[in-house]
Length: 100
Image (cartoon, rainbow, N blue to C red; front, top):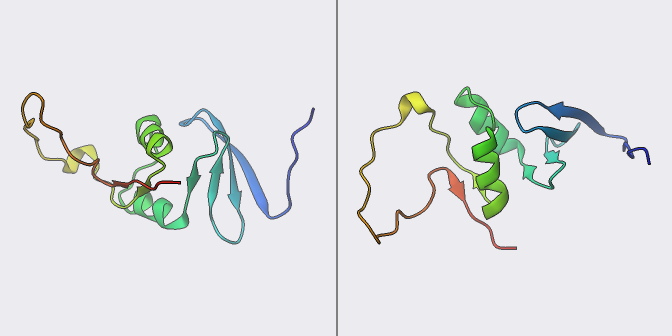
């Protein structure tokens, strides 16, 4: 069965995410084949950091239904010391979870 292409959307294949994505022409929202959605603000944050959504970032966003609020590239990360055994690490930097 052929895919349905809707007016107002541009369709691409992401080699990085290994899936099809659709970009809304007016809003800039990006819908992924796995139903993960990137808002224009999230795309702007990644572009400002000169980064793209890696499979790891994408997986975290998908699993936690999060919003990218900050993006720290590898070259800007500081060494982090673990909190020790049995102590929670806290939230994931740059990802804000949403319950749905």
